Image (cartoon, rainbow, N blue to C red; front, side, top):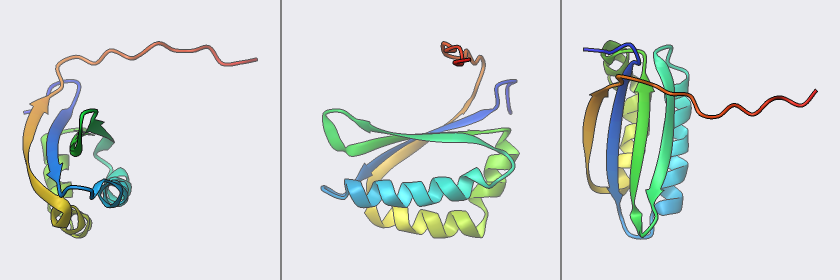
Length: 110
């Protein structure tokens, strides 16, 4: 099921201690693969401020079918392998975006 705002997955990743730089590089490679998928609506990576080995990934998709198509792809398998090597644990929470509010728009300079 997808709401008007699309389909979102919140992923919590616990990584091997000290693997942050390698994880961030591998995530960057995976996000570049995801970006090329037509159903991709963007991703973000955040690190917990006081837990350097815990990250959250927010990945947005047009719909659940598009996300499923991406996760079944060869690109996802390859990128996922690199991330899995660094992961100690985590969770994945699928969501339906109910409302989306854009941030403040700064006027362009003339």
